[in-house]
Length: 221
Ligand code: SAH
Ligand code: DHB
Ligand code: MG
Image (cartoon, rainbow, N blue to C red; front, side, top):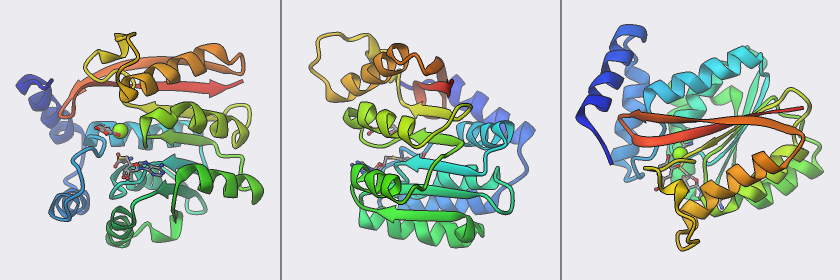
């Protein structure tokens, strides 16, 4: 589902509130030219992630699902000079494109990109004692949402913020029939956050250039 007005309002938000950003425009153009799917967060959502990093005062950020690094760059920009984003990506081509985008955006020194199955990379981060992370953005294969949320709990501390993308997806989150693994992943995020006493969360429905979807957001108690 998409709507002309939603996209026009997103354009209005960006043109009224954001500086012209040829670097991020080039990142999006590169991602399309390299054949990456157009599932990067929108500019308005990317800026929200960047603001959340700043609001939290985060120094260590974890992202599950890099794609071409568009959301990674937004979050890296919200970090202080000694901050770091660890971002996890399975697809070697996506990772290669992301690396070149990090160079272009001047954030390579703030980004630790790990290629492989996110569940394996998370286990590695666990054994390295790489946590705790102050903010964790989950945006990869949706059926693994509960596994990623479990890892997020292990790699966080009280006060950490956990954000999960695509939890509304045109309202299909209401489908209880269990036939769509994507929807099940969204619903699993709700049951995880709702069922874990250490998490206090909500979800925000969003419309915009990327259609009708939403973020779940929670704080670790
Ligand atoms: N956060 C990005 C979009 C991520 S799209 C942005 O907003 O710019 C989801 C990404 O997750 C894709 O690049 C896909 O290759 C990756 N992915 C899918 N399954 C994965 C897995 N098991 N482990 C790691 N990454 C995975
Ligand atoms: C899809 C994945 C995403 O992370 C997203 O933001 C939009 C769509 C998808 O797999 O279709
Ligand atoms: Mg997403």
